[in-house]
Image 1 (cartoon, rainbow, N blue to C red):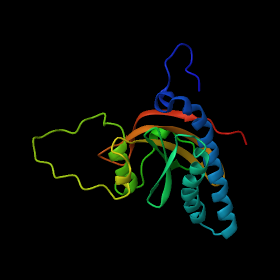
Image 2 (image 1 turned 60 degrees about the horizontal axis):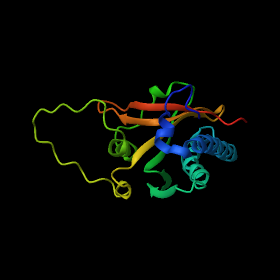
Image 3 (image 1 turned 120 degrees about the horizontal axis):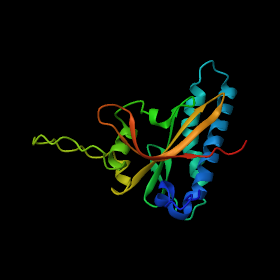
Image 4 (image 1 turned 30 degrees about the vertical axis):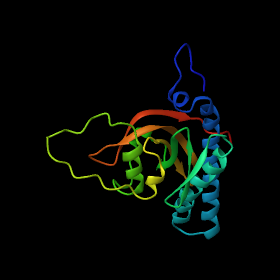
Amino acid sequence: MGTGSGRGPGWAERTFGESAEELARLIPAGLVRAHDRARSAHEGVRTQTLEAYGHGLYAAQFEELAVSLSVLPRAVQVRLQGRTFMVLDGHVIYPFRYAKKNVPVTAARLPRATGFRAELLRRHGPEPMQQALDLGLDEPEEPDPRSDLALLPPDTRVVIVAYACSMTEGVIRIEWGSAELRTEDRYLLWHHHEPLALPSR
């Protein structure tokens, strides 16, 4: 992950410093292993639907990234919503399968505008590009964070690892970066995103 011809460091280097290059290798390998496990689960239960694959991939992505990134000396684990998340240099790594085919990461949106994932992005995502309109009205107090989110220091930032993946094609595309959740819908508004190279199979 060089800086290119005379340019300054990219987003990943600015975010993770000397760990960026190793993260860029470990994360894709972990997601490929998660896909392999989920596909094996589907083949094992032989259902006509892809439930086993989808649920298996969701669980395995966290487990495989925890195994992969635990080799980094500054990486720490935190349990959120019954899953092990990895935190490195004040950044929590959040894997997110946004598509089943090769579409741009800018098309990514959350399944729901509420719940843990949405709250995580709202509380620990980047500062919004567009500030909320101040009409001079009294705003209701913000609800207390879910007990799990209270485990993260307030200055922790989310790094989204967004990937397209299907049972038949495997991991197709991976990008990582920072994004805010748009207030009017479920789409992610990316501040920075960079591709991650897929490991050779």
